[in-house]
Amino acid sequence: MHYDVIVVGGGPSGLMACIAASSRGARVLLIDKGDKLGRKLGISGGGRCNVTNNKETEELIKHIPGNGRFLYSAFAHFNNQDIIRFFEDMGIKLKEEDRGRMFPVSDKAKTVVEALIGRARGQGVQMRVNSPVQRVLYEEGRTAGVRLQSGESVHAACVIVATGGKSVPHTGSTGDGYPWAEEAGHTITELYPTEVPLVSREAFIQSKELQGLSLRDITVSVWNAKGKKVVQHEGDLIFTHFGISGPTALRCSQFVVKLKKQFEVPTVKLTIDLFPERSTDELYDETMKLAEQEPKKAIKNVLKGFLQERMIPILLKKAGLREDTTYDNIPKQPWMQLAALLKAFPIQIADTLSIEEAFVTGGGVHLKEIDPKTMMSKRMDGLFFCGEILDIHGYTGGYNITAAFTTGYTAGLHAAEAAIGQEVY
Ligand SMILES: Cc1cc2nc3c(=O)[nH]c(=O)nc-3n(C[C@H](O)[C@H](O)[C@H](O)COP(=O)(O)OP(=O)(O)OC[C@H]3O[C@@H](n4cnc5c(N)ncnc54)[C@H](O)[C@@H]3O)c2cc1C
Image (cartoon, rainbow, N blue to C red; front, side):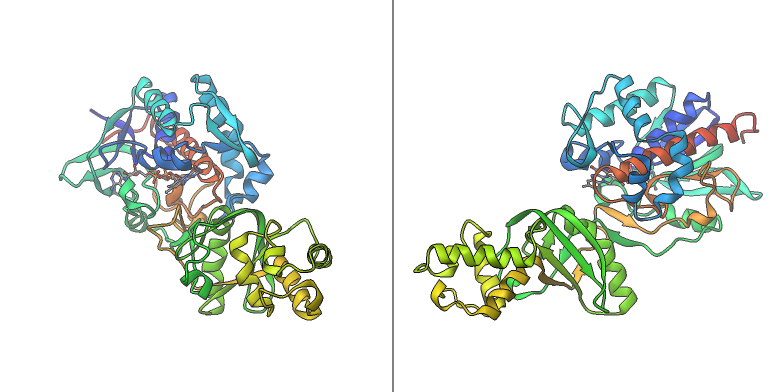
C-alpha cells in the first residue's frame, strides 16, 4: 500500500491531522506505538476531556503564553468554534463550564477519543498501533517515510510528526520526535515542565499541617528576585504534602521555572491573596471588629469562620500574635501585619515536579523553523509538525488540546495538498 501522508502519533493533534488530510482525499496511515490511540486525551480534564475553550481568539492566544501568537494563521483555518462545530456535527454535544471550558456533555473523554478515531476510520485512514516508529526517513533532501522499530520501512511523500512532549510518559509521550526533528536540521528549544505542581520547603509545608486544604477564589502572584511582580493568577489552589497544586499553582509554574533560571536563585517567592476583593485596611478593620464583638474570646477562635481554620495558627505566628490574645490586648503593629499577610501570604517555591509529572512540556521544535500557515518544516520538504512537540504551550483550561487540534488540522490539510500528485516512493 502506498500512502500520501504518514502521521506518527495518535494523540489529538495526530488524529485531527489524519481527519484533515483524509478529507482532502489523501491516503493516510496513522502509526502509534501504544496499544490504544488517544491515551493522554483519554485521561485529560480529569477523565472528562476539556476539549477546547469558548473564549474569543485574542483571549485564547493570551491563555497560550508559550508562543500562542504563532497560532493566528492556524486559528484562521480551524479555531475553537470550528472544534465545537466539528464535535457537534458528529453528534457529540459539548457544554460550557466556568472560564469558558468546554467538555462533552457525557463527561467522558472516551466519547471524544472514540469520535475522533471513528471519524478518521470512516474517512479511510489506515491505523497501526503497537508500532513504534524509530525514525523519519529523509532521502535526497526530502521526507521519504518512516522506519519502524521492527525494521520495516513505510514510504510516503509527507510525514506529520505528532508525537507530543515528554510529560506523563506512560501515555506514550516520551519525546521520541525531537531527535527526528534535529536530524532534519531543526532546533529544539530547551524543554521544561509547565502546568506542573510546585515544591516548597517552607516549615508549614514540611509539617504537612495544610495538606489537602483548598483555597477558593484567591489570587497568586509570582515575584522576581528584584521584588517585581511578574504575573498574577486568580482561581483555586490546593496545599499538598510537597507544596502547592491546583489551577493557580499550575499557571504560575512556568514563571517559577523561568525565574529560577534567569536569576539563578534557589527559590522563587509567591504570595497568596486570600481576600482579593478587599483591601488591607478593610481587612484590618473587619478583623478588629470581629474581635471587638467578642472581647473575651481568644483571637484564634474569633478568626474561625472568617479564615480557613488550619491557616490561623500559621498566620498568627507569622504576624507575631499569640493565639490567646484578646481584644483588650491586641497590639496594633502585629494586627496590621496580620491584615497584610491576608493580602500577601508568602510561600517560597524551591522547585517544580519533574517534566514527566507535568501536565505539559514547555519548549520544543523551534517555531522560526516552521511555516505557521502550513505547519511544514522550513528545513525539510514534506515534513510537518503539530501538537505539543512544537514550542507551544497553554494554561490548563482546554488551551493545549485546542493548540493540538488547530495545528493538527492545519498540518493535515497542507500535508495532503503537498503530497497529492507527488510521486510516492
Ligand atoms: C493528565 C493530563 C490532563 C490533561 N488535560 C488537559 C485538558 O483537559 N485540556 C487540555 O487542553 N489539555 C490537557 N492536557 C494536555 C494535553 O492532553 C496535551 O497537550 C495533548 O494531548 C498533546 O497532544 P499531542 O497530539 O501533541 O500529543 P499526545 O497526546 O502526547 O500524543 C502523542 C502520541 O504519539 C505517540 N508516539 C510517541 N512516540 C511515538 C513513536 N516513536 N512511534 C509511534 N507513536 C509515537 C504516543 O503513543 C501518543 O499516542 C492534559 C495533559 C495531561 C497529562
